[in-house]
Image 1 (tube, rainbow, N blue to C red):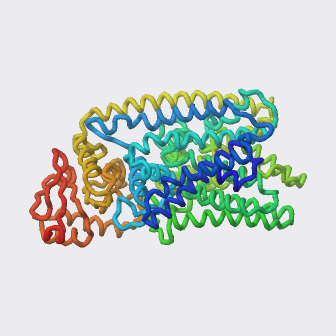
Image 2 (tube, rainbow, N blue to C red):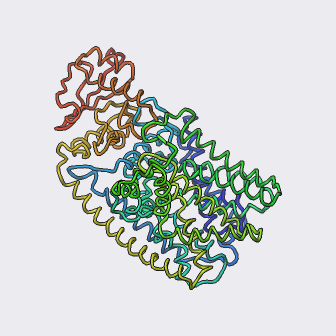
Image 3 (cartoon, helix red, strand yellow):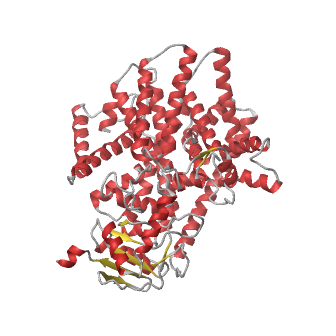
Length: 637
């Protein structure tokens, strides 16, 4: 709030100022942590938060302890209700699922969450850092979400997995609730309305039937709402991404017609950079729509406003800065899960629409079926909101073309962002159907446009039509929460079974070995492992060793890393040499690559025999043996 009050106008809604304070605080701590990592000085980040808090309190008292609320604003129980709901459902959907993960006979954690856990462990030692799964590889990713937990771990020294599991609901529920309140205020637009109606304006995105999984993903059944699952679990930071989308547009709209302010420029630059650090797709959308609105308005009004150009430049610079230095780097391999191609093939192949066309015998990649399939994909991803949102957009274009009136600039940011997101979903292909994030990050805007059209057409057929789907959305939400509870019970039952030879499960002995490495080896120790895949699909996404040992691996699951297939094959060949029966070859690779520990699993090397006197057995159980390599210097000592 110290930075929010200093950089942003006081007239902004309280929810916007609190939300901006949250993300400006993250950016401030990240900067301090970066300086700490560069200088090698400890405790900077530990004192940074309390120091800024003291400065804020001093300023607050000096100004006569002004109310947090502006004139006409008051404390809302709607916010408390939404926050409590999101927090509880997030705990059910995420935290409870892994309640027994570390105490049973078997461990099974979704690979995305293990990936994030490994990132937290790596970033807690230094920011930036190398990829914990691939030795020597600079880590590029939109990892600011993990950075929050990494900074907590650096300060309090919790283990990475528990920090992530226990903190996720709080980290996501607070900003998401504030963002939904901002959307509710935008819909209310200062009008008096009944508390129940205002609650719907704020909460409605969660029952909007946007991004229904069975409509969009081939084979998808539960959870029914793809949107809600991402918002509640926040596993890939989509709750934060949507919150940042709302925040950035709300601020841009409020200052769009103001006089130039260098403070606003700084705020937009920092928030744009932060947004891209949380989700690259969200940063790209915000940069794109800011440029588009500026250019279109310039063409319509024929008036050039230099300060708006500066705000656009600030947003662009923030995006480009983080995108190059944090998210992708200058020389991305574009391999594995980072592969991105232009065209509708990936969306159509992985979607329910493509599946239906296949069964009907139509080639959905050939004209005219590809055009029909793309239109259907757009309709399915937005859901029933497609009708009123289209009406909303058409009405705004009519007013602009016929009357020459631009109207509320917020509406144009909404329309442009949703259109760009829909285009991104239909024409960008990313492994795992990650192009869906283009729409999920715009979900609150889709709901806003839908409700604004319904308000203008109250009593007409479209309003009754949407009331049916709001009711259906409530039913789907209840069913999804029930699914989360059942899934928690089923997942915790897995922990009580034996792992056996299943590659997607990790036995208690294997987990104990990883935890032994975490608790009994130096933090900068480097390990060699021999498991890479869960064999659930074509990808090599086994991340258990790095996530639970919190140690740098020479090579582990690599399909989420920015590394070419040629490099992977070379590293796999070298990795196997660590397990060679030729002791000279083993000595050579250990001395060259400076590894410290060799982890041998029965699943990876069931017939392994150690014949190297410099490899000393330091830990052993039924499934895993761990050897410490004694380098020449330590051997001579």
